[in-house]
Length: 176
Image 1: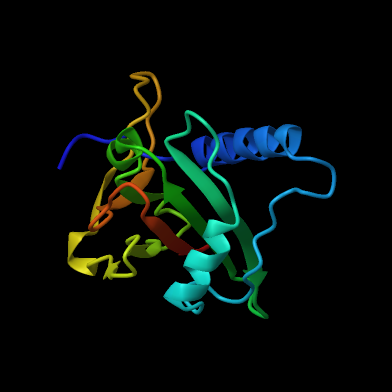
Image 2: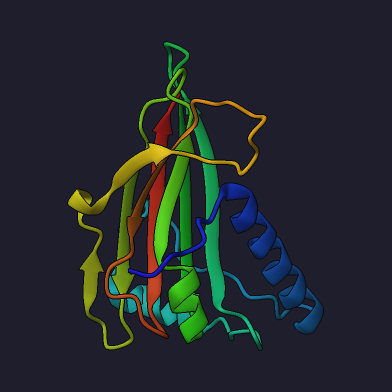
């Protein structure tokens, strides 16, 4: 596996905002792309995901197109918080295969449980590869700043069978 950039929530948000801005600027009024699928992650059929993705035209020079992103927080009666991040994107270039080759979630063990990570990769021919839970690793999250000490951790895993044209659906769930 090649070394890959870890996509932090901030990086993903910046990419999503940029893609959304570019789409909004280039699209004619009333022509903004809309993700038509609703419901929990991984519930839509492969054919439905491919059909929805085909409606969103890739932008020039983009490694990947974020098709859908959702964050939600649920607070139960005991005051426990569950954070859920869902992301669906399509790989547009070989550089996208290399740079978007893993999924990850950061967490702080002093107040958060280990995040659960799920992903499926839908290849252009309709074959599906599920993320193998045995490939998920856990380690310290480094910030490249020697003056900052933290117990923050990162769970990450390589996305299986990634290829140009693949649609990746991933979800991380962290209980706080």
